[in-house]
Length: 334
Ligand SMILES: Nc1ncnc2c1ncn2[C@@H]1O[C@H](COP(=O)(O)OP(=O)(O)O)[C@@H](O)[C@H]1O
Ligand SMILES: [Mg+2]
Figure 1 (cartoon, rainbow, N blue to C red):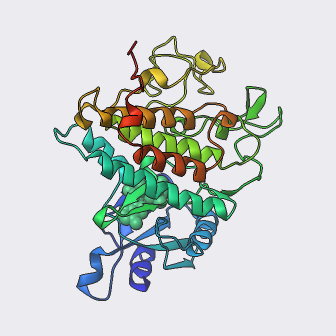
Figure 2: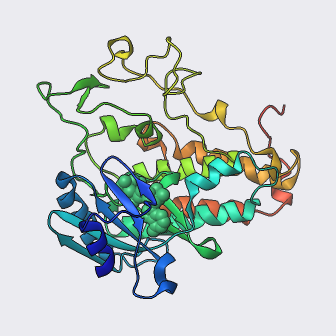
Figure 3: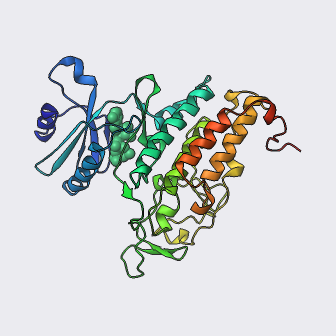
């Protein structure tokens, strides 16, 4: 860690694993060659990001759960924060993007195992009265043996805390009324993958992570990264919207009309590589599809009560006997 920190703060050039607007993640430099590929260091690129990242580090350092990315050490030096992590193989986001173009794809049990591990990590966070608030496939990392780590605690908030995206004030700069609440930021494509109440809700609740988990299940059922978020338009693609789509995208005046929502139900088609329809397996997948739709309800009150309930229901679908599935109708079936 010390070597990595010195190299980064000396401005030494080395290949960046990932570089975003506020921070970067780079391979760590170890004392022996063997450790070179085992760790990464996350650091802020802008001075203003240092204190937020330090808060992120303090929180993550205190977490101890198999499905939470461990942070064995962190440091704060000259307005820069450094977090040390074991190196993951890849993110679920990358896996989903690749899955879309592969002929053979991950079997269902493996996909379900990912969902179960993510649920376990969320149950742990929620037991600490914390909400991740940014649970997307890009923030779910896979280590060797398909072990799952939930990562990126930059948006973490305590349950019951005010939602920082809802200003609650008409006079606030950069605000716009939306469903009766003033939201104080522009929505970007990536944000639209998140639970909608993060932009109009006033209080932080674990229901937003239930939405995020539903999105992960949806992606795995579809066998691809589903870029579509919540929208009022059947052909809304966010970054390439048709003119008629009026999703909230301020300050673009042509799109200032507030959104209404449509159900995601019509757009969830199950990955054909998971087997033909009409089989017991496809009937189970239909039950998982319904669970995903429930978790993705626009109104948080319509979602399952807790992550424990979600996991119990997923486990119970997985264990459902074949005979009890015979009366289940598939979509389009009379
Ligand atoms: N432990 C890790 N191992 C490998 N890659 C990582 C690790 N942590 C983060 N990354 C990569 O860096 C990216 C950004 O990290 P993240 O913590 O999500 O930062 P941000 O808050 O900027 O999104 C991730 O999407 C992932 O590709
Ligand atoms: Mg991230």
